Length: 544
Ligand code: AMP
Image (cartoon, rainbow, N blue to C red; front, side, top):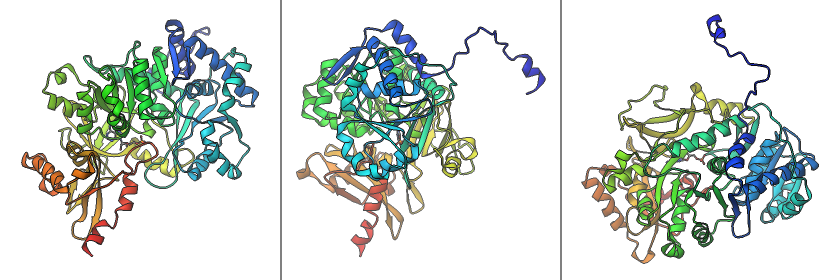
């Protein structure tokens, strides 16, 4: 360090507290301001933040009695519950690592993640015991299995008093796995410091504009993103910091979720588009007042058709963007007052955009040589990022870690553009782009347009190999009414956008297939990889 810099270095008084950014400190505000606020588990249990705090002490003492120490790994397999929230806090607060197991992976993938993360204990809901029984003979170390059926008894037998220690804020707090696009699951990991900064970053991102959106201390929060998926996007940490009323719904079932929204007057949620679609298509939705509900859609593009359906019910819906590797928040499509003054059609378009960056996020759009493409609202390139909360690599995987961070920026594998107002729009994924006759076709754009057809409940567009054009788009559509399914009507609908100049004729998919369901990934997104494999020969079969 140069001499002139060291002159400005802080001198620390020996009694000064060098405040580490650790999860324990997130509890400071709610425990002074919101002791009586409620945390609720479906229709089964409710308690307040004081009790929550005591239960963290009880869980810590229980884990210590079971031999868990700082540096050990505690895995959880559970539905979204108060137990999971308690593990989000107590496990890292002990200095241990929380491994949130993706319960939707195949048993062999779950086994891989358990061995790879070197779990020491698994806290498991009875529903998942059959999976563990199937794979436990292949555990590579001694792993304790703790049934969550015993959880309440264990906690009530333990002392609520535990003095959680301070430690280095760069201690690893959590680990989980992303299935990515190819190969074995990849482990990502986050430190206390990263989670604390993300907690604050999320709050400031959603409160960036006034007039809509927002997340406030008088909200009622219910996640509809599984807690194993990027810590339910980190929002339980933000909700707890703000001392809001929290509702954990257990296993997702559309009718029960709607009932909870109504009974607990839920005002703030987040989910992938498919889940929102499932809720809005449920008969109960028509009889539920959803006009006080704010919903952030992420994990996949928000289709305008779905956004309009939500807006018609009074739901304040908008998109956000992130990845497992990014903790996840990168951008959010909150609308400024100027944007809210625009026409309903324009507002709809803006809500479905990928959004503007969260504070501290450096987002660049680059070409293959890492040069920035113009910020002109049309030049596309790969989105690469830096932020204080990105995984620093893939766990024990130096090769893929270096690929992820090539050139000092995290590569998202997403393609998009940015306009002069900083609004980002993802147009496709690197691995998802359709290249036909040398021209790019955006599957996401096509999906958005097709989703606005009245008889479309769900749609996926993939590129399938074509002898002549190298690839052509194939639209897979789940119709609202199968009896009325008509490919010509869908093509005519798309033609309308071509006539308006919004789409090139080239992008019209000749092939529209009606299906009863579309394959989804373990986190409920359209599984493009699987669909591409499934329909890889579709064009050849037709032509041969
Ligand atoms: P995951 O790690 O499973 O959360 O997947 C992250 C990926 O989901 C991103 O790299 C994007 O391809 C996609 N994704 C997430 N949010 C959005 C969004 N708002 N619009 C389009 N794609 C998104």
